[in-house]
Length: 234
Ligand SMILES: N[C@@H](CCC(=O)N[C@@H](CS)C(=O)NCC(=O)O)C(=O)O
Image (cartoon, rainbow, N blue to C red):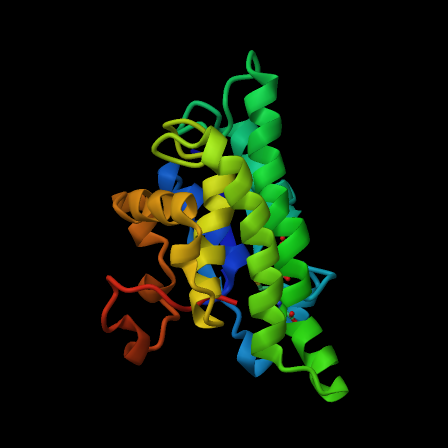
């Protein structure tokens, strides 16, 4: 018997997509509980009792012994690191500990997306700035571009097939869903050639494609059409 993994997720959530990609790459079976952000389901007690930040994703790990309490991780980077620490052998997403410099580069890139870009373009922030007369799309586009410029400058030097060398890392896991979101707000992603190249390589990986926002249980039918294309995310 092994642990049971459950993910609170929303098809268009970039933070949820990070977990979906990592779980798929590591071939870890999990079940999904869809939390519809547009219906405010993230504020329902079903979600907030597990995720006090009222966000997605939440990763729930139930030990094989059902009398043991589940572990609940309501932050995507913490959940990614947990999976990495508990399942390092199954598709490692960090360079080896003998290479702390590359590990720091991976974390730097992941943080550009997860700490500098996503929080300031998140739905709750867009809702707060809209009444101030801010154009939500222009706001997001500018902030994503700032982050992508920083990301591109680094990966122009570190990328092989993926952002850091030739293996998929936590940096890529954070990047790809951000690219989907970037296209949705009109970022000319072609201006970031290394990011675009890495994106193409990532989307060629079957496990990554299974995690795509167009390919989820809660993806509405109309968005399933044209799975090959980009766009989406939030
Ligand atoms: N730092 C959190 C951020 C989670 C987060 O903001 N998730 C978004 C979806 S990508 C969300 O739930 N947004 C709801 C809102 O803004 O109200 C993490 O990495 O898990």
